[in-house]
Image 1 (tube, rainbow, N blue to C red):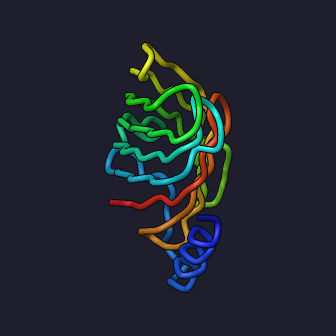
Image 2 (image 1 turned 30 degrees about the vertical axis):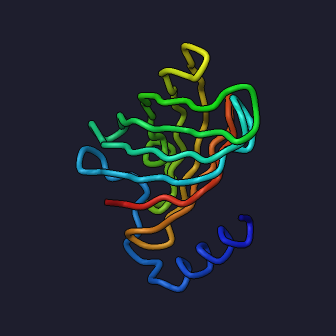
Length: 141
């Protein structure tokens, strides 16, 4: 799986690096797909986000585990985008966030700090650390 992520990142890097934007405020929509390394379990993750204003996005996601105490976590999420506030380049974003939802054994809540880097206007990579750890690819819709 690591080889697949490296290949995807390499191919994404072949595209134009200009005009890439990690968070675009209320017009922003993101799709993320990745792998969870720890937290409720080891597995795959996917989420969608929609920008509400210049610093806030709301969304939903799901995680499905093949290893760990749970089978799944389906959640709503909120992220606070700090990239522009702290002067990061337009193709980077730093965002703390919270996920709240249902797990296979009950209620679930976790917090994270995430980072996105976009190679071009459509494709980038992300990492999240906190109550869970995830790495993957992200797409502007």
